[in-house]
Length: 358
Figure 1 (cartoon, rainbow, N blue to C red):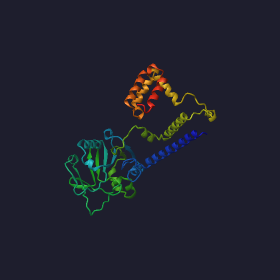
Figure 2 (cartoon, one colour; figure 1 turned 60 degrees about the vertical axis):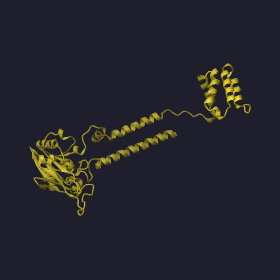
Figure 3 (cartoon, rainbow, N blue to C red; figure 1 turned 135 degrees about the vertical axis):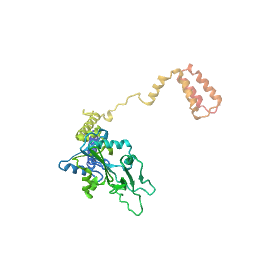
Figure 4 (tube, rainbow, N blue to C red; figure 1 turned 120 degrees about the vertical axis):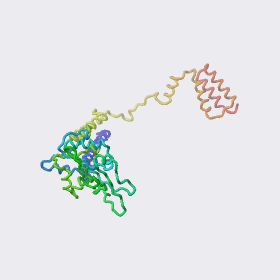
């Protein structure tokens, strides 16, 4: 095997190993789910809610699924829709149209559970009471926040806070859970989404709160759209859904074979010419190329005048020439068209290189 072919084989092997490692890394990230947002039911680490998703799926007479589309496409009732990890500040300033959309979904018979992401206490000089919002005018709910104090230790220093500084008020009374009925369903506001997380189910399970929030419905839907994960028709999404990684690996192998085929032909290599058999082509040196170039672009009658003009342009070879000598050189150059170029060149060369007479 030639060295060139051996190098291409090694490159193909390295590329295959790299592609395999990349697929394994991507598979591990999909398995752990850390590429998904916090409180996503796709995440299996402590920051997600996949444990709750799979736990409900194991309950008898319960079914569970995910929603990847916006609420504008929602139709049907008799389900509990878990809306986990909502930003309480954004929700407090939700416009009236959005709250109306929540009411329309709940009126279809949906138990819409909106659990707020835990937040830290606000600084002493920050705004802690959010009033005169659409949330207060339409549902009679206000959000307030605990203020940070130096004596109170920060319990929310970890990646997933256990407690929240949010205080929900309905009718002037604080509550951790607020339920607003609309039509056949209801909107349930939960101040802290931590009990729905994988970490809470493993270490701080609150079964009573989860049972109260889920309600009587036997169909539970985890909303992923509000977390930024929507249903798309991209190639990567289709490959993940239908497990087409083998097809992708096959395409990579075919691409490598195509590159190898076009870079290294299957025909046997030609015998190399020995050094003593090398033949030097005559008349192909730099001087010959210059002569051919001059013959093609400058006529014999203009050769001396062209050379003299280039000599003048180059500063006369970097030497000082007296005015009398320059006049003679120019007269000889003007008369060179009537003489043979070689004879005229020799005459000019002797005059230019002559010293001491002028």
